[in-house]
Image 1 (tube, helix red, strand yellow):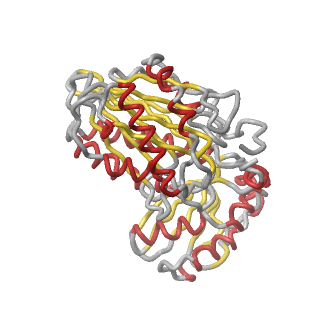
Image 2: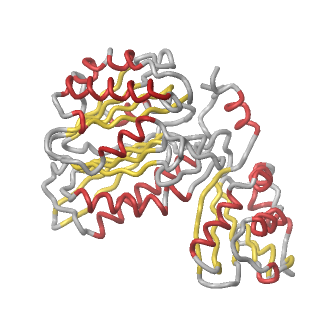
Image 3: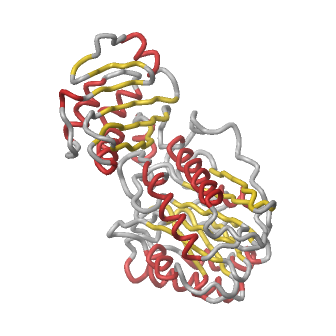
Length: 408
């Protein structure tokens, strides 16, 4: 699991108090998949009629559970549903054995919970390339099935952690027609973070009534501006999954409701930021805002080039306002740029303007900004109206310590 000795300095003060989402219960167990002395399996059970949406990694080496979930999303919503997650083993790059493990787990969950196998969604996170000892999971299913707790989401957030130093949760509520709709979500993620259509493992629950295609549209759209705009280390996981379930228990129809969609977006962004704040070895939270690009797509290319640069990330760790490295990243990104139009800011400090060091540049002021926990890097390309914002963290020796012995 790596030598994790303390909680990230960027962690929130405490896990938030999340509302009970009517229509879903949570249970956790210690199956010993890899870790000893801690919970490592989570089961969420959903009432009949719940609709499920999801987005997943587009890695060409994605794990068996991901492929199984992708095949099931958008299916019939009659009957109950379940989501089972294990930590400690990703069940990725495990060949036919990985497929067999998914089949065994989903079949056992279906039988134990009395639901259709096509309504069982699983995720696995942890070491890649190791056979999943799925019998350890199926052995605790009866315990899980009998331990469902509507208020157990905090425990579920802990059970899905791997190298995370803190559990991640967020909530939102929306007033629709004088009635309240609740939304709550949990996530895990700390390293191997450079999403593509999803991120890490994320599970969001709401009591709203909503059509599956409408829910899918919200999840797909907002993943692009939240989870797909964060990076810790530029590495995309084989297991990235985001699943959202709507139980309909509130009786309030949120289909086509903009306030509901905005609330989901806000919750997703909150969780995405928490993942960055728990980046392996992170001591700084970094926002990179690009404006003036030739297009939004170009702006994101530039932003990610900055966010993923080891030279920039180590400069941030060393609290060095080295704007020359930002110039380097823009130049290498491959998106349109004109050296003589570039302007760069660190926080409110203008460090470069129109292609060279700003006449008002203050090394002292820029260095002072870099000493904070929240770092802002702004770049204007001077080419058009394209814009994008992404979030990352610094790169410290802690990242090496965690990953050098991850499998031990």
